[in-house]
Image 1 (tube, helix red, strand yellow):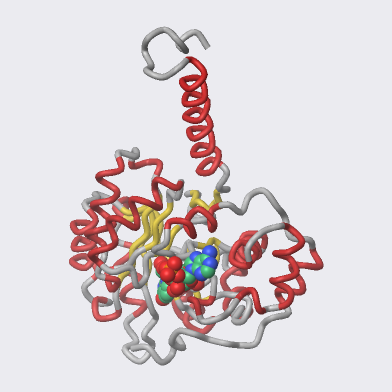
Image 2: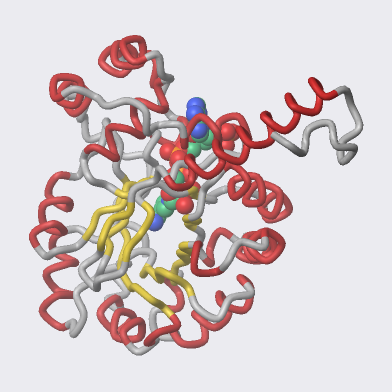
Length: 305
Ligand SMILES: NC(=O)c1ccc[n+]([C@@H]2O[C@H](COP(=O)([O-])OP(=O)(O)OC[C@H]3O[C@@H](n4cnc5c(N)ncnc54)[C@H](OP(=O)(O)O)[C@@H]3O)[C@@H](O)[C@H]2O)c1
């Protein structure tokens, strides 16, 4: 390299060469990490990075630091919600990052008490995020006892280009059926609680049959399980020299789900994105799938109103 030893750097030529090589390697790692994330094409023709970063329970005071680190690590897809109370921190991290807006995929969600007030709720979210559009806006829960989710959906349909894609969360087959009977637009996404111990096959099948992409929330079981104590996960982790969390994230990806594990810990951000250099075998996938035990950590969609 001709720049080494020209006086532009201040160590010995060897030290400067090492520094330069290290900085090139760092740059390459950063690029290959974010570039390695596959995209999924939605039923509206838009694309979404299959691996993202969730911020449920990230303290509003911590959100800017956490999302800044996640963007530094290489995540480009952030999943937040009005109810998380941290849209402003997420927005500050986005603004500060200097990453071109079109390289980011930002999701937020409509809370249950705003089903009849979509336009105002959506504008509040945009303002807090400091954005003029989001990539994905979701109805957070069907809240079926209130019975306003179809009205909420019609509100989302009216947002136009300010919500590039629209979808739902926590919709069971009966909620989807009712929605689809009255909707003009088929939801692009159904985001449901999904991990090896709760796979919601009925909701997955109903979503896929309607052309709706499934997103897994609580993909690691929200910290409720010792993943390494689950034999098939531990065995696959050992076999591939990976961690139990990496194996579970890989299981989601190989099943075609969109997934966005949450962590406030930078080393785990690095760990959770480092899942593109190995592949679970059909046998390993099946053994992890056999961990299904209908173990729901969050609310049942019919009970949260
Ligand atoms: N639509 C909905 O109703 C809904 C509901 C819940 C969640 N979500 C979305 O889904 C996202 C993900 O779900 P979630 O946050 O509930 O749960 P999760 O991602 O399954 O689990 C998060 C927990 O796992 C820990 N963790 C993360 N990486 C780890 C690793 N490599 N090894 C060991 N532990 C690890 C985290 O700890 P630390 O943070 O302490 O590192 C945290 O306690 C949310 O952030 C949110 O965006 C949506």
